Picture 1 (cartoon, rainbow, N blue to C red):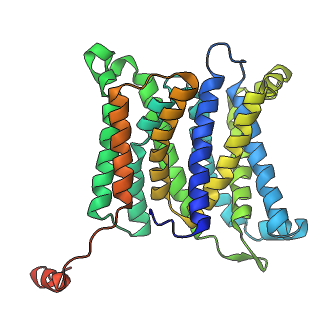
Picture 2 (spheres, rainbow, N blue to C red; picture 1 turned 135 degrees about the vertical axis):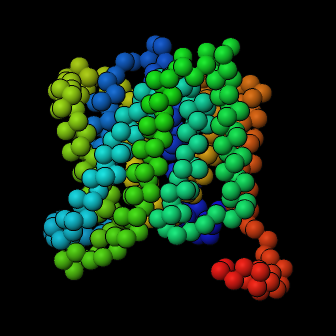
Picture 3 (tube, rainbow, N blue to C red; picture 1 turned 90 degrees about the vertical axis):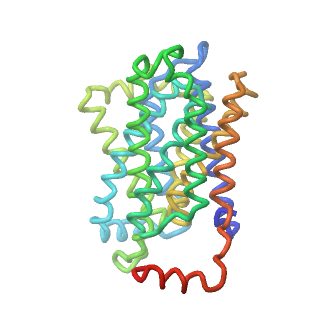
Length: 335
């Protein structure tokens, strides 16, 4: 199913989904009334720093020594610089996670974010010269319909209309676009990064290290430009971050980042979007169980549509009858 034909691929896929569901629930819970207040910029900076430390640690554990790391990094500086693009995009995305989850509940947020699957597929198929089959196009339509069903009432005049939440919707759109562009570009770098630097292979762990080094630098630069770098590392903010719930957020978000690198290396950006669509059902049910977030008939219908879309996406297309291709080519010589 979904092309997950090895234990490695199935493990990466399942881990990715479960980590994201857990992270959304933790972020949402940390923002509820009565939860300890914390500074989101502090969490983002500590998360990116933790990702870098974990990537370097995994390289030293599985790929080589400190000398090997230095040699491989020095020999692949152009590749490291190319990670500036996804690092900036992910910087925007990660900061907007905290902003948008203060406006939308976890289920709503996840359903809305699934609109990116269409954009992902359009960009991805152009860059990788691959095309959708009819089941996949229908599946993407079902997932998009599920998004509209879940939030359609808020667009009606009685629900406040789009203009009432224009700022929130715009930020969600920016986050969505940043996610799509960063994911596809990162996949290009990961799948094209099999060259050797100084006689050493550029491994996925090393590329993750490049990614998070750039991310730390760009997050710090943006905060410094905004005059908030000192705020991110202020003693009172760091003290608030040391609560168990926020430390859990940092640990899970750091793990998600590393798993994403392996996901894009062994799978692809479109399947990553499908995995995100599966989070809709799981997050909605989990939010109901943990926080008592209401689940109405429209929410269930939206979840069913998204789930049907995921199932159809994985369903193979029946082969054409014998002789179909020959007839098609005779009718259309350019095929």
